[in-house]
Length: 134
Image (cartoon, rainbow, N blue to C red; front, side, top):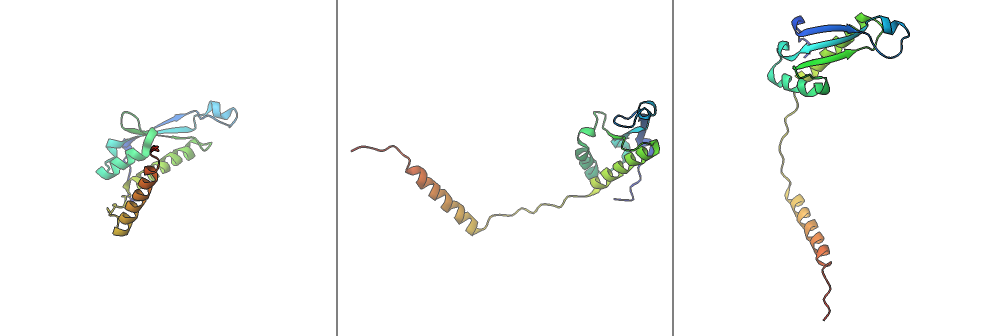
């Protein structure tokens, strides 16, 4: 659902120093972004709310917030945009409904094949009995 607007009061951004390569700059400048998203304040429909919780996985906190960490880029603004884009993708996936599964039953031929296979296996096992000496 591309036209879903994320309310600003549902977001909380924190800039932290990023790890990994980047020389001295990475230790001094807080370019990585931690984006916290309050699921209650998003105002999602029930099916999307259930699915976004499932999609979030380990990024979901006990306080029902999704924590998105973005530190791919060297600038705050690029990381900020990256975090918001990832949130938008997550929300778009949550709005997609799964196709309903139509229950089917096995046909007559499949049932007959199953019974024949069981009978064949039964006769193999029947032959494994103890041998009686007369």
